[in-house]
Image (tube, one colour):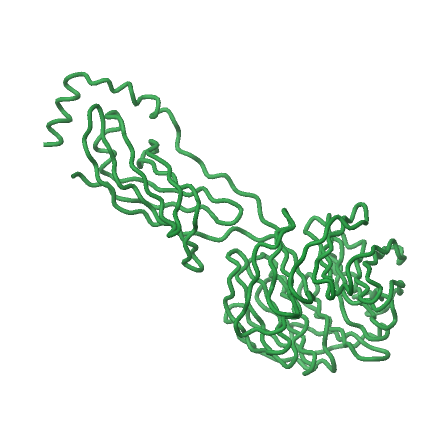
Length: 438
């Protein structure tokens, strides 16, 4: 019956020009979205604050039901995972950073403190303060596969860009050392005397220098990684604690926990550059990937100070959780999504068709959670526009479309394409749905 009515309309010379403009519109093309840069702040009072560096606002706080008193935080090289040590629970919390969801709690050693990810992303190394060891965690299976003895009070930890050497600071009172671990054999191969109570370490991007924070020497030592020789020391302020390096490796940013300041050190000239007042008892520092800003955790203030590295001044302060300690900043990709299209029905109308009940449901691939408030575009399989709808609280977008006869019955009964272009937080997705005749 429907086909007979359609033939009559064409025979009568229906005004198909009414829909001709729609046929000239090309299919939409997804545009690659820029990448988010997020900060992860481990609060010793519990929880990890997620900070959007574009707005400098805390967007969410992650709580691991089995994690207690998170200490340090590291983010994998590709930004897809975060790792947080829980010093009281002896676990490593694993975070899926695109969705900011907690995936696992991996048992490690006694008193986990520092954490670093191999450049390949395949392994995570955790320094265990009370055990004096390093746990090697397989990133694929999320299990501890080996334990490396390194010595008392294993604290700050760093890895070379090639992943071949691991450095572990020993937070012991008096003259201290940094252990050098061969990651090929997972054995300690050397100890480097650096100063009193080394607590944090960092390796320059070219792998040529190791920077060591000596807490009770009130300085940083710069070590040649080829010879393990100390090239020199640079004074900072009172009781330094954390360190981060500029992307070009020429400057070190050092928190002074009792000096309530951030020291800037020239690693080429081995001289101090500046001392910037921040919050109360700064502990850790991390830089944005472009090196334009340094974010400092202030333990007593419960805040993060944002330092402009060009002007060497505080550009802002953000409240976070209770007693913030560790911080990491990384580019984080959008969360992969899944779009599932449904079944629509086709009805004949004067000079065209109505497609009723076009629908598609958008969810996060990793969590299955609905993605809310996103536009989904519906088109024929040949790219003719049908309609656009926004996903509701269940992640479902639904709309009806009036279509000119010129589109053709043969095209419509082949179904439709639903697509989501993606944005900073969620990746693009596409799906095919069916259209049936009433």
